[in-house]
Image (tube, helix red, strand yellow):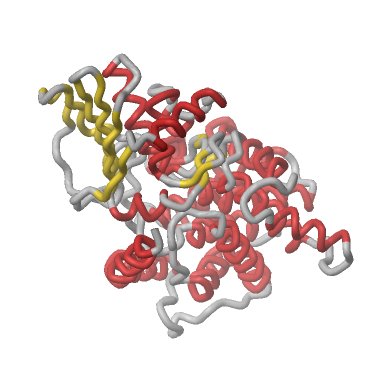
Length: 430
């Protein structure tokens, strides 16, 4: 590793930590993982499951289809996690799920043996599952990251506990202190290829998920609908439409419960899809070589991580918008843009889609994915022509890094009440 670039090793750690395969929406999957770990410790089939999650996790889990179940919500996630989850598989905890497991889980729900409530915790991301059987019980709690187990308790005895830490702290396994958009750009475009080759899997996994979504059997089937409208002659089969179609199809499949993993980014499959798929489509369009594809994917995914690092893990902001800022960077570079063009594209994105709300994970997320990546393509094309939202406009500053921090300030301080109101509205419908 180049001694003159001490951040590069941290960048690699960050991408390896934040860009991982995930089967299904990561919020209900986090609860499924807690239940699977509890079942492993309990050792027998649970007679009752009592779970609780943070308000933000409830918001992101109550409306999404759990893979392999055809059912929506947190209770089914807890049940299948407890009955058939792989406790060692992380965000792919449900990869071995079978139809008979789903049938057993449905029976538990029908019998009133599963309950999921809102936990009175400060952590934005928190889930716990308590499994009971034969007079014994095990409780497992996960906090601050989707797979970070913080407590294991059995029959009143605390078996494992991580030291307390402030809620919503950044991942301590890497540090982005001193990072900048320019540093991200330089790393992605100059690092030894063998050091970053692993990011190619992000394109491969999300492309396979997109292929599945184009079958039209998942979610709102937006990607498949776009293809039908191309076939009808109502849409052109141009670069923008292909970006929309391929990216949205992957989100359709993910939100619709496909048994195929997404390559996630910053704890979200949709963020990984929005960061990677537009880059894949543009790379295919340009017929670039392997190295250029890999560098663009690294630029997109790492830029998304860098932008997201200033924000809370879960918030009222649709984080797909920040992920699409990453793909804007990757697309701008693929299309011949230099660093100033990349910076212009990010500022254009923040000047356009900042403030799109997150109203929980659901099939409609694919709509937000399509809006975000469409804005990314538009922002890139304007940036390549030298057009940029000015530093005197709204929350955009002359400096791209300050603009990114301004967005985080809006999210972390300004949208807290918005988040509470969204959850209140959602819970009033249940």
